[in-house]
Length: 170
Length: 170
DNA sequence: TTGGAAAGTCAACAAGACTGACATAAAATG
DNA sequence: CATTTTATGTCAGTCTTGTTGACTTTCCAA
Image (cartoon, rainbow over all chains, first blue to last red; front, side, top):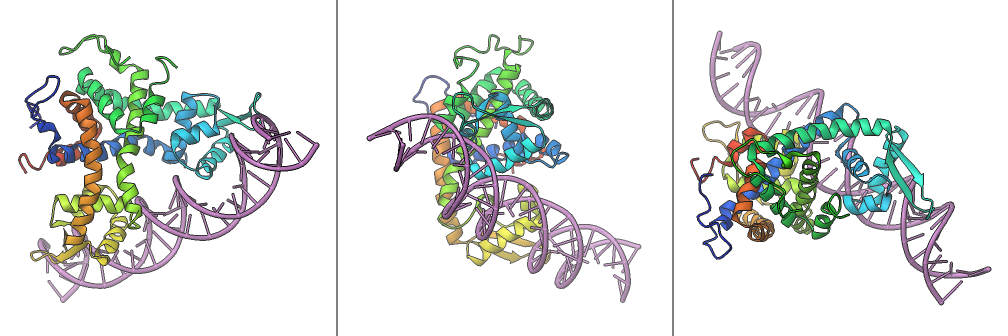
């Protein structure tokens, strides 16, 4: 069934066999199962540190944007400040994250990973990247392009902007 | 940057520009953001019924495989039976799911959606399918094929089997 | 018939999300 | 300068959904 599900492949106006309810259902289930695989390796590592996915997410995005503020992080993570604060408090107390009062605006706290924080970030992202790399390699560059394209259509447009706001432009 | 990230597109042995850490990181973040978008619509609906994602998942897979047992469901959902049981108890009490004692093996319970259960399933999957359909349509059939391919590589192989075990074969 | 394995249920607990209320400090505004 | 808004942090309490542990019922095999 993977062989030739798509009769047409040109610009538009084909018979849209890839939009049947069955194809959509498979896409939905694939998202569910893949997300579980996607989080499995980090989850296993986090157990050793008594941290959870929430900590991983914070660490990831602080690493990605060093010096980001709490508010920025709230925007990206889409959780309440109470929820994020609980996580950040732990990470700061444990010496994985450093919180510096802003120089221009002293209300803001700028967040940075410490050496220890970078170490955990690396351990986590190594595992997650390894799985992603294997999947990308097995699927091939064209599949990866399609993968990215569909995911960007599924996500909130604000997140799509954020995603493409670094490396190439931002 | 989306224009021509992949110089080679043949069988293998290209320069593998799509496997850089930056590309992998974007894939990882795309999964995170897309999954949030993917669950957003059902989550909104479920609030009206005081149910959560766990209920949605149970309803989805009971609908997909009517008469499935609790153990089958446990295997697919990857949670403990106690966790699933709490959800099933609610759905059964609320009249969305019917649990029939097995005829061959009286230890087993076979699960079915009631009319009411099917109604909620429809409401939920309509919303989720609508988003998926829009994304698929915008991305095009080739992208969808790549999307599916990468997701299947990311997920546990057991789930890949399950995913492709209906409609075409099972 | 006895004992182990399997399927399912009940009870208690933990993580991590949520809301609401409140505190502090600094910036922005009139 | 007084007031309001913004950014952050904290406390308390709730909810969902995951966990383990203990238990019952049923099946099967020695």
